Length: 459
Image (cartoon, rainbow, N blue to C red):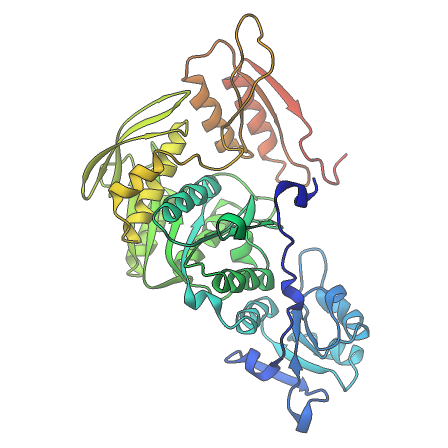
């Protein structure tokens, strides 16, 4: 796909923004050691005009940050960055001798405890801390993040706010002819790209940013010192166990959004999907963490103690009809989104709105028109009639066992003659979920068709 053909703008080259800032200022309050000062004036550290963790993007005046990744170690590319003319190198402790051997005296070398964290912090400083001028909402969880960002965007935009979104489908901000839609490289982009996006959003007049926060981004310190006004937890089911050791590590990583990245006085939204116990479940453990740390939290879902509670629910192919109990009383809402889990998504959005002081009656009115995210039980036009009727064709992103089961269970409950399921599992990703998804498709559909999805390097 050519992004330009889909209405996308070019991604801002945030790694090479045109500005020059004293390296000492960028390092700020970081704990660091100067291995060698380079050829800065009077023995001071030099100024830098760009920051990158990719040696191929290094150039005259740049700071190259060497990060040890899961497959490649940036310290092995220090020589390449020097060859391309960088002014300074930032390395982790333990790499001093290797860095010194590769770096001439004219290039500054800085040593830190954790180069990932340092990279995120100097990126914030390089773009002059744009998040300080924004209200931030972070969404984390295995499923539902993207739909929630779209729904919340429609509500806040409908209320007149200037909204930016950073998530799986794309990065976008602005409105009308000035709207920017940028292709997403990751659910949560790397530190320089993220801070550059936030800077562009601030400069464009954005007031609220809604961000999907992935477990990878939290584990890799991509969001640096960002602190959110509201953080929401959707659910936790099997995914990314090719990266995380087990579900407990996966959960612990997700909780960092609440324990480390909420503003003072910020609030947490915790969704309890149908059948979830208040104690001992992932949402219950997160609620306990919030209580222990004095974090204000609101619950949504079906259990009786929820602050935003689903009282009744009915679905058909046209959408969901819900009655929802709120602190302001019960509200009836008809959403064009289909499925019980979309009722959870709607309640999560309402609970976020509560913490943002958005009137819930106005939010409900806007949610009745909100279409949600593309590719999430999205109805597409069918072709010719088959057997005297035109099939209903829906496309959904479901890529985990839990998501696939919820989609198929939802559709199984709706009036239909036969349910066909076409699905696949991505290559180079958690192989343990493949038999689970196969069993679910076989059990809940009349005919299951397995494809190779995106095989990546697998054959």
